[in-house]
Image (tube, protein in one colour):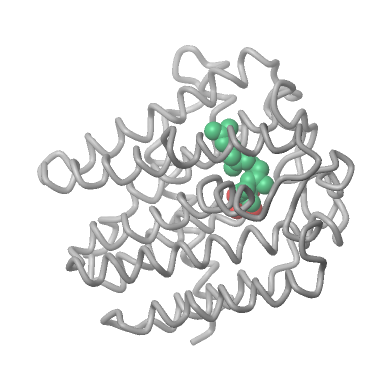
Amino acid sequence: MDFPAELKRQIARVERGLDLHVPRGDTRPARLHTAMRYSLEAGGKRLRPVLVLAAADLSGAPGEAALPAAVAVECIHTYSLIHDDLPCMDNDDLRRGRPTAHKAFDEATALLAGDALLTHAFLLLATAYAPQPALVQNLVRELADAAGSRRLVGGQMEDLLAEKKPDATSDELEFIHLNKTAAMIEASLVMGGLVGGAEEAGLGALRRAGRDLGLAFQIIDDILDATADSATLGKTAGKDAQAGKTTYVKLHGLEASHRFAAARTASALNALESLPGDKAFLRMLVAAMAARKS
Ligand code: GRG
């Protein structure tokens, strides 16, 4: 398989889906919808929506069936980035290679754009899958759980609390990574499986793969923050050390962090093995995330 070409094709599917399933920028109030699209259209790796599509393809979902679920996941992810960048949180000026939403617009607009993306995700699931009520219920439960107070938002809360402590433990760090980062990656694979009609065992394997991929992804994020430059990352580099934040790199050093990331990646690949279908693309995607430079 020509992996770069296939990844490009999947990302193009996501971009088309975003355009199709998010209100146009001139929808009233235009400032709000323009801000929502400004952050969504800035790009990014599109890892999570591509995972939704790839997991659905694996389970044999027909054509574009998984696209609304993929867009819903990217809406939630983008909202979390917009809010994370706000002055009351990470206070960042650069995201996805562009000024952050509150810099390009203003704080109130950025806050509302994030709120609206969060809500839009669930409207999209309820609307697009309305003919399959049981699927709507499962998708909404999965996404709400991943994005909720015990997972994404809870991980962000503990992350903020840990910033104030000079000596956060590896247990606290694991909670943060599992929830702030891995929850949405896990949900992406599981939602793809749900759309594709995967059985319980398949959903379990997708969940395990997502969890390990998510942990590997965050360790690599910590490594890149410590070693790459802002231009390559499209966001401010070196922020963790500057903030005195406890990261994998700070707790364990660079070499051990590389080892942990490799072990989690291997474990994710292993979990994928039990799934039916052609896993070549998913396998290569997991490997590409381990080797990423931004
Ligand atoms: C505000 C509720 C709330 C949550 C914020 C996503 C997040 C939680 C914070 C962003 C900061 C950060 C380092 C989070 C860890 C997850 C992560 C690495 C997000 C960035 O994801 P990428 O690299 O971003 O996939 P792109 O822009 O490529 O989509």
